[in-house]
Picture 1 (tube, rainbow, N blue to C red):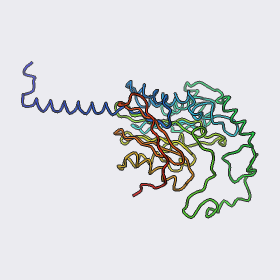
Picture 2 (picture 1 turned 90 degrees about the vertical axis):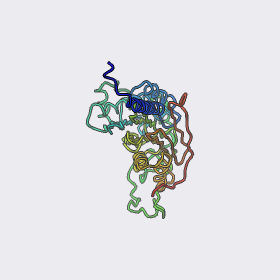
Picture 3 (picture 1 turned 60 degrees about the horizontal axis):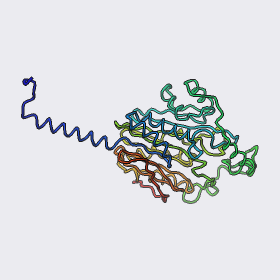
Picture 4 (picture 1 turned 180 degrees about the vertical axis):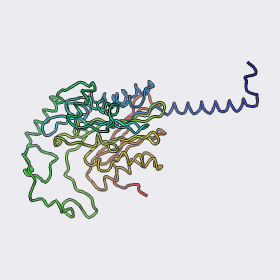
Length: 365
């Protein structure tokens, strides 16, 4: 046995290497896992934490976390039973992304299936596609084992829809149509000059004046969740039932990669919430990841992404959170006060962070 031992001069070097490796492992373990979510969706973060802290992959944790929010019908804007469209129907949008492989699965305007995030993961697992939509997404999800078809409306959503109808379908997402103050049927407004963007919709700074709708966390919201697991892999997911009184067929930013969420193992993750019709035009989460890749800290990257939108749409409402691969996290918002939830190994339970609105001043070189 003695002949197989290393010579004594090598022992200090071997010990130093082992100590160094052990130190990195300890640091690694103290940093991860990480769970971050939009809003004070504490139970959703707890559900994700139980999975990832148990040693399971980030993707599994994202599914369980978002599923918990769907079951709880967080703020009435996630899962079945909320946000009726103009026809009184609830439909679902969801996305999941693997930051290690850059694979994405998503569903949009999905009917008759209540499990949005699980349907999105099925798209990732069993197809070469990224996004399935509408009733065909429902048929696919059911064929892969999810329960359905079922009615996604609830007493609450139908009551909200009836009240909206009694109020002459106001407010709504129509523009340049007649009649403008009733439930339709709608026709193009022949008096609109769609070629004129110099005065009616743009000011001298090039900003767009958009009709102000009552956007808030109870009618226009998304759970966006990011998870970093114990081995450092990153995943994100989103789930939403969209905007209340949306035009049937509308798809917001929830299932759009780079808008509602984005992940890259080399950099970190981002999640977003708010006026998806505006935010998806800027891909704020992709912007956040690329800004962090270039060296921006999460706070600056998040503020920069929000500012780019606010400069063009001063009355837009939305927010993002950013989390870097080294565990730093931050949020930024415009038009409302934003909260996001976090759990890391140093916390005994989920903690909620509050972010106040910022002014539009992008951190652009």
